[in-house]
Length: 434
Ligand code: URA
Image (cartoon, rainbow, N blue to C red; front, side):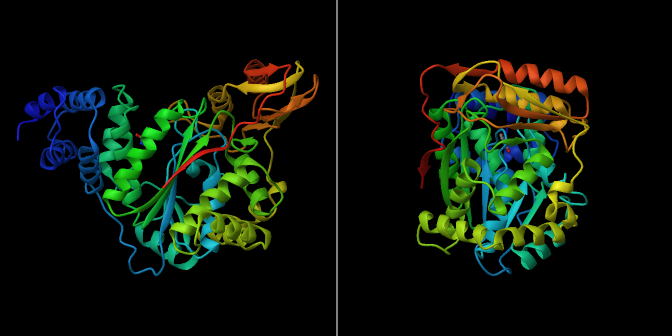
C-alpha cells in the first residue's frame, strides 16, 4: 500500500477500508511512516471525518497495536467507567469501590490530569504509598482478590494511542470525534471489560462545551463499543461548575472518603451512584439503573463501600491510616478563605478558569515534567443558583505559597457571575443514552 495514496484518499473525503487503516496505523506504530506523513493523515481525518466503520477499524488497529488483557479466568462481569474529564471529577474513587462491593469486577486503567482537568492517577497517588504502576500479573491478582483495581496505562496497552496522542497534541488534531473515540476505546477495550459506562461531560469545564457535541461523541463511543460486542450506557452530565466542592488531588480523595462514609450528599454522591448504578445494572446485579442506584446507596449506608475502598488501597500498597483518618493528613502550608464581594444569586462561573486556577496552585501540570503538589487546591463552597451574601466565605484556597493564594483569590472573585433574580440550579444528568 502507498501511504501518499491513502492520505490523498482521506484528504478527498473518501472512506478508507479496514486494511488501509490497519496498514497506516501499524506502519506508524512500527516507525515505518515519518511524523510528517502521519500528521497529514491526522489532519485529513480531522477535516474530512471518519464514518462508523472507519472509526471502528481505527479503534481495532490501535487496540491490537498492544496487549488486550484477558480476564476470562476471573468469574463475574467486568465493567468499567470512562469520563471525558472535568473539574473536581472524582467519581472513579467512589464508584469503583461501590460497584466492587456490589459484586462487579472493576478493572480500571486511568489517566493523569490533562490540561485544566484532574486525573484519577494523580489523585490516588496523593495517598502515601499507593501504587498505580502495577504490572499485569499484579493487576490480575488485585482484581481477583478485591474486585477492583486502578492503574495507569502501561507501555503494552494501546501503544499506538500513546504515539498518536502526542502527535495530535502538537498538530491541532485533538478535537476530532473519531480520533477521540478510537483513543478512548482502544485503551478501555484493552482492559478486558464486558461493558462500559460513559460519562460524557458538557459545559465550560469540559473538553466539549456544547451539549450537541457531547451527544455526538457519546453516540460515536456507543457505536464503537457495540461493534466490539460490549454493553454500554452513556450519561451526558453537567460540567458548568466543579463536581462536588473539592478540587485538587488529596482534597478530592478526602471528599470521596466523606461520600463513601455517607457524610456528604449532593451532586457528587448523585452522579457517582448513578454511574455505579449503571455499572451494577450492566454487570447483571440489578434489573435497572434505578435499582443499581438503590444498591449503591445501601452499600454506602452500611459501610461496605468504604470498607472496599480501604481494601483497594491496601492491595495497591497505600497507607490505610491516611484514608481511615483523613483529617490528620498534613494540610498545605497556607490555607485561606475567599469572601464574596458581591451579593445575589450565583448565575454561572467559568469552570475552565477554576480548573486552571487549581492547576496553577500545583494541582495539575503545565509541562509534562511538572511535579504535582498533592495538597494544593480549592474548596469551592457555592453552586449555581445559591444566594450569596456579601462577605460570605465562598471558597478556601490551599497552597504551598503566599503568591499562589493571592493569584487564585483574584481569579476566583473574577469568574463568578451574579444575578439579582433567582437562578435555576443546573441539571446534573442531562441525558442517558443506552
Ligand atoms: N482522552 C483520551 O484518552 N483521548 C482523547 O483523544 C481525548 C481524551
